Length: 117
Image 1 (cartoon, helix red, strand yellow):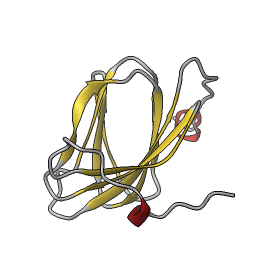
Image 2 (cartoon, rainbow, N blue to C red):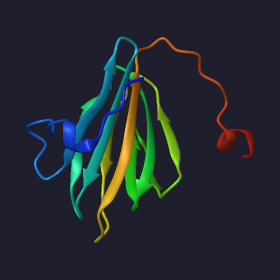
Image 3 (tube, rainbow, N blue to C red):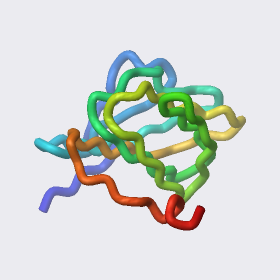
Image 4 (cartoon, helix red, strand yellow):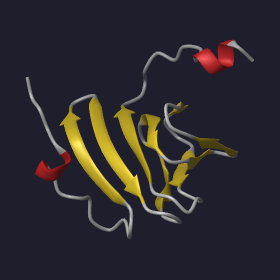
């Protein structure tokens, strides 16, 4: 078993006030803990891998392609590989989330939210 704490890993450089730390990096899986101070965000970029965004604390505006939604604690959002994406904290409080990246292709199933719409 491998146990990793935030204090054991260095922040990814070049993200301004956003603090992103790669907690696990294995073939086929990368888990990144992201802390976003008020007004901070991860730069908009094309997503080479599919990614799930799980909000731990605060509210994060997630944008994928032409869609955007606000996500609060306990919310999981999925972005397929390809479209541009961005995570931004538009609030006046800090936010934290996990970004779980997996390479494409992967099996896509209907999310619980989609199933209830």
